[in-house]
Image (cartoon, rainbow, N blue to C red; front, side):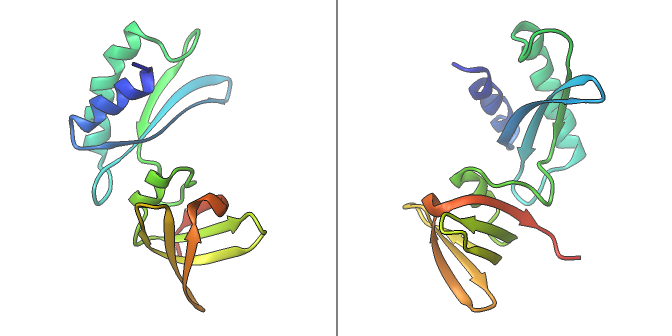
Length: 143
């Protein structure tokens, strides 16, 4: 099994879903970032619990060479959508999409079908968008 699938199994044991992992460098520090998401959001207590589960595993199987800091958090209210699963977690939220033909759409993500069709409610009506035609996507929050 891969490290990511092991982390996925751990966070699912506490009713969270693994959203994404990444390695970033900020202010000269390497950070191994694990983003988790729960049904209806993610609490700080859930992130702490996930950290306590993941940290000992990373002591045995480090995600990077050298020193790093583990950071477990929610992916945030405004986040990139890269996978069909990301879209499924975002139904009911505002999304902005850029399609292969350079079309840009903004609206509420209404549904994601099993065959990869996205239904986005825009000002002009509901648009059916094939997931495969999306080149860039993110959620956004209107203040």
